[in-house]
Length: 319
Image (cartoon, rainbow, N blue to C red; front, top):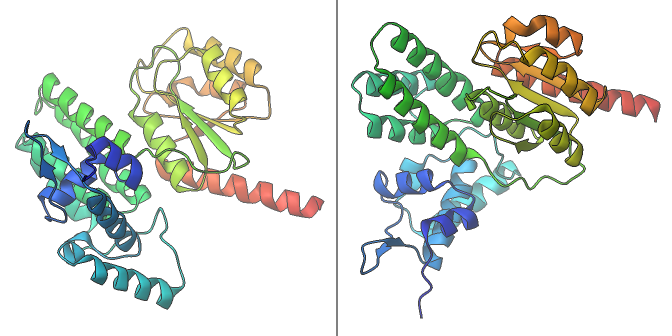
């Protein structure tokens, strides 16, 4: 009897997001799932094996558009030839080949938003996620899109409801990029969240994805947590870095004292990185807790890489 798998089960077994699987199915016809009597999609073991092959090939640099219609034997041959020629394995931040640049995708994303074509907007995000590495996707597509949407709302080009819908789509899309963390427990760990009353979580979510792409074990907690809960997670996961996003409000009268309390709870050895649109308004408290102000995702990535390299060099010198 043929085993039938749900989309959620396929995503779990392949490591691909449901959004990406549907994009490969609808746009590229890479797989053709069956339909139950109730018209629900189902996938077979053969579908799962094919998706894994497609994933390997795209991670090695092939564009999904050029391989979607190849049979499995051809996919295996391509994977073997590329891996043998370059002696490499798929990398999480490898950028597959594409005819479109990040700038092209960004322009198309904004066009969809201006036309209020939200389904097309979501599809463009998914296409960009196939063609670009995580850092490029976040820095050149998602982050500037959020800035542009904010400006469009301020200028009256978008209704509040439209801005909220765009944020929900982006939140769902970024959530689909999160993967179960398979890094060993000894790997350096970063915890990411927002302080109490900070409800805007996209910055913290992008910080977690940025750290993960840089090889960190990451723990994303979601938004709006009090100091005690944040500290408990930092201690439980033995995190060496805590990343906080502060977006709104700009003048929370309680946040400063809560940051000081949080530092007391986690001790002096944990680096605290704080960014977000409103973070500069709390620089006095960031300095008081020996925190580090981060003004961009690129800055976060460089700091994580530089800090890790310095720690490695110090360890080697001590040995």
